[in-house]
Image 1 (cartoon, one colour):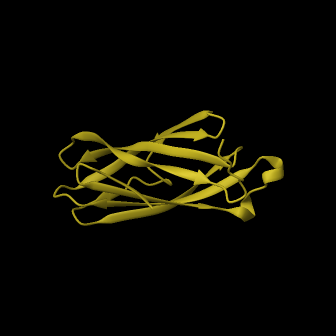
Image 2 (tube, rainbow, N blue to C red):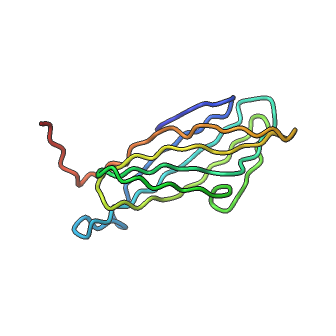
Image 3 (cartoon, rainbow, N blue to C red):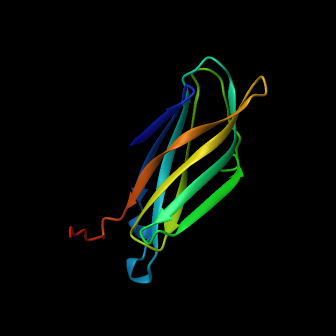
Length: 130
């Protein structure tokens, strides 16, 4: 599990390689990632946007911007949490994801929170040290 805390909002991510949806001979690798967002603070917040940087093993970067997550813009009162699962395809057996969520308080203040960088590693990848 990977975890980051920004302004009393904790984001935890657990990636899982999905062998059944992957096809290494065809250069198709797929991961699911489970995200838990916890409001550890004292103010109500709403997740409004997401911004991901996805880097594959060849250094290619994809950026993903959009409203909410999985079609939702969850509101988190103090002590509440929201979790969801999404997925990421790559053409390489390894990669890294990192990003931010755009949040807004119930008083209208906008701020960003960190999504921790996490590694996407295929068990089919043979690692060698040079």
